[in-house]
Structures are given as structure tokens and as C-alpha cells.
Image (tube, rainbow, N blue to C red; front, side):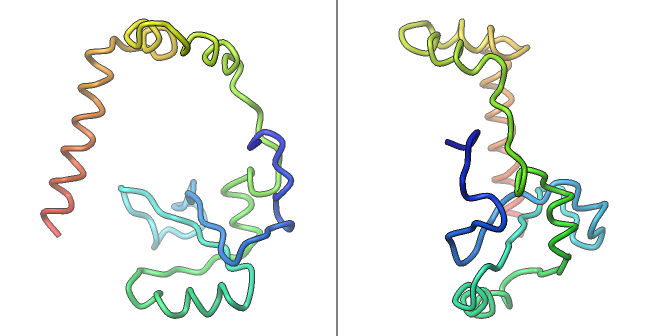
Length: 130
């Protein structure tokens, strides 16, 4: 459904739309954080009221809708399905997960799991330091 989404800007049917803010350094350098930054698009009065009630607990930076669209083209443009998506769905049913990992990533299952565990560990340490 995401590859043929009918709810692209301006056809939002939500009060707030939240996603990743790619290239935040380019559009709002003061908001950059190595853990990533979220982009919230306030769509309705109700969404604005909700956002206003929680924004004191966040670091908030404002950008124009044009910059939001430039940073995240998929807000308005259809995104393409990965070339091997249908192959993956065929392979996932009944094959060894290790073989699938090797086929669709460039690392061994051991390295794949190790990298995921390292990321979880870094996130735990980050939150414990807070």
C-alpha cells in the first residue's frame, strides 16, 4: 500500500503526521541529533492542540512545509518498491533465515545479528547516560 499511497500531502486524514526528518542538518542545523530527528506535520486544529500540550517535553524547531517536502520527498511523491521485493516474499516462506539474510544483505547472519545487538547496546547505554 505504501507504494501506491492515496494519503500523500495534502490528502492527510490525520491530525498529526510523524516521520523521519532526513537531511535535518541542511534544513534546520540546530535540530540535528546523532540518534535522528522526527518530523511532525500538524494537520488540524486538534493536532495543534495535542502538539501544544506536549511540546514543552521536547526540543522543537520549526521548518516550512516546503523544507519538509524537500527533506522527505515521499511526503508528496510515490516511492518505488525495492527491485527484489517480490523475490523476498517468495523466499521468506520456507527458507532458512540465515540464507535469506545472506542473499538480501551483504553480511553473514552472524555479522547481521552482531550489528543489531551492538545497536541495541549503544541505545541502552545512551539512555542510561541521560
